Length: 382
Image (cartoon, rainbow, N blue to C red; front, side, top):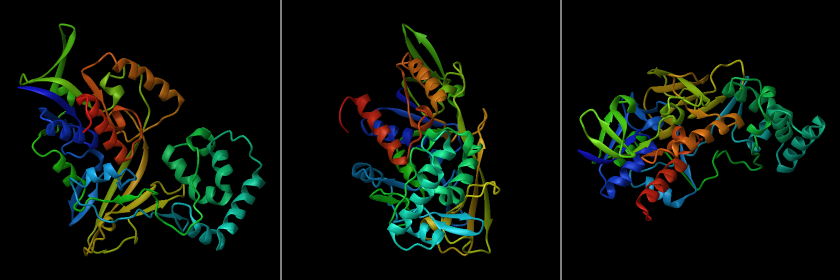
């Protein structure tokens, strides 16, 4: 059998690419090393509750075309992301807004909140921040930094804020309105019934194999000046869309790119109908090892008699573990550039997604990137 594309990875990038190529009459096979589709947005039914196995995913976008696109595959609810931060028993609204400032200082007007922040920043006398701590202090002042930024950031990065470079935080948004909506995007929600159903609909009519890694599934050999990709059954593929780790594809020949990882601890609470009253509660103390607790039923306004919670722990990434976040600093970006130059010598390859492009993407941007890749392949607008 001759295929046009072998898509490696059934996450959002791979699934959107496969969907559109299938719609345009191309023959596509999708494989994924995990035992399921949907990548990190995978949701599974537990005790009647859609559980986000790899952390909370809230779809949000200001792109009307992308919003219309995802609504072709799922109906979205009206969930608005409004996380809570917990610091030593105190609860604060996120993002930093008038509800946050009122709780922290007892202020009631934007002018009072701004004056408090300006006063704290001025008292520090920081003119040229030398590290992340000084950068954050120069943006939000002492109280917000100490209670809501410092511990959380140190857990995420596994380092003291004073040991992190200043450029990691370019800005910390301060909103002087009583609005707890975390995102500014016009469109927001979660697929009713979970993300897995949405991706299943994208992959309808497309061959999919799970529990299969690329290196075990296919082999590449050069023939007549071009690369021939063949699987063990003798099927051939004109091109490979690769959404795994860019450096891993090249066997780390130029060195390892750096990632941050996550670990999840999920607990079923059959006798508790409401554990924390909110879908996401961030724990900003450094002494508490997890960064947040997710209570999944609140994503879909659930009324089930029990509940399911997940504690999310940041972790150092090591080879063989699951990578979640690229670490885009100067050293890694330089190495990325070398890998990207190497990739240009492989015209049969298309790298996509967060790992394939070593870039942090929100979900809407992943989909937009995949649609752009399809357009470039077809040479025409979709």
